[in-house]
Length: 466
Image: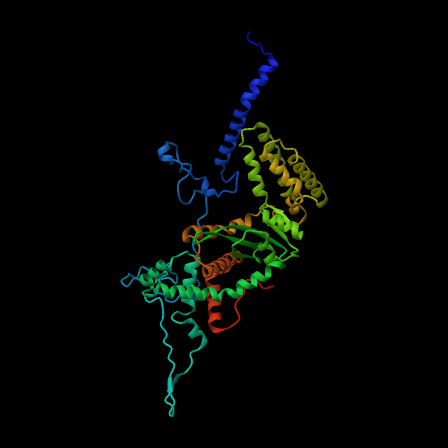
């Protein structure tokens, strides 16, 4: 005789049969959500969002929003004319056969034209007289000046140009060689170019070491790291950014991505604030030294936005609530300069409590629990910027500083050994710091190389107090 099941038993059997399937579906949905991550929901670069370029307006049948070039109503921008001290020659054009009806004026219509001279380099021959000893017959020569001997074939300006082309323009030795042959009319071997680049790296060592020694003295540093390939090995490029036009950006390539790198360059008693992401090296550095950290809110917000893309409705609602509280926190932060100090502090404390309270009430899903765990362990390290003026809540400054290094990595495919590493560290540091301080990188290279050739003290990348 067939057994009859109760309604409760039927529901239990259905749950037992479908539970593995539902778990499997949830697993697939989580994997699919991870594959759909983009720059707004993860740390992926914005370039990774471009899968298929959008159709043009002409092909899609939609009218263009605006035409190319200058827009109606925008003021016209013209290049200012060269001052008189920069004008090397002037030509005056007049009508020769003009009737007396026309009176010449002391005014001119001016067109300034810039061009290269026919020969773009000068050759200076240095001659050291030879001497023979009357008794022994030994022959010696007068010594060359140190700057001539150290410079060799190329002087400081051409040496600086090659260093700028190699580091700032990412030109290969063959491309630099072609430029010198075709444009300058100066054939030069790739071996000689490599020697010149080595001289530029040597000239930048002193200023590079000065910035390294200044790291532990900074009140605020943004730090980040990115991969660096070298002969099928994965190294790490570390970036240290002291913000502001009086700050600097310093790069170091290391085999490790650990707290030991931070201890090596910041020491055990660093008294400033470190802005960083949530990587374990910074958390270990916090445990071992008690340093003040500011974890990046941009990274956290992307992770919270990722929760909104998951299929679990409870996780979605948690992400929505937390994101709303974070937005409220930053609305208060942006009003810091417009509110009375006491009122702003009360509003900021309320917003901070709201964010923390919401973050500590997650659903059971692991992605939400991971967010809550951050606030259980390191909530104070997310709110340092509220109590420390001048500290930014994100690590965007250092991440922007890595853009040129990432492009360089893709173009050059990394380095091949310690010499290449040292060159990259020094030229990247020089280019980034000069751009940050509003200085000409080429002029700094020229000054550094001339001082290196002449044996004089090197120029510094640390701004001098007024």
